[in-house]
Length: 102
Image (tube, rainbow, N blue to C red; front, side, top):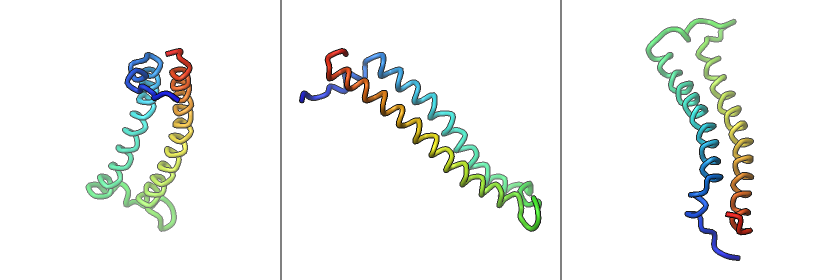
């Protein structure tokens, strides 16, 4: 089996489109994650918004913290599904290279 020239593959339009799709997916999710995560300590440290009771003896801070866990698991699940699709596209590109189409 011949060596794969990843430099050549990296310059192909198909590969650049794959990178573009991946980056358009990752950037918004990363920004959302960072803002949602950093907002929690800011809101709890500098405001009293989350100190109010939501129901019973549970404050909004506890609900926000629980939602952060749910958000992380959801984002990981979404990312893993999309990553599989990106991997399949990358495999197609490598297969085309190995078959001499690129």
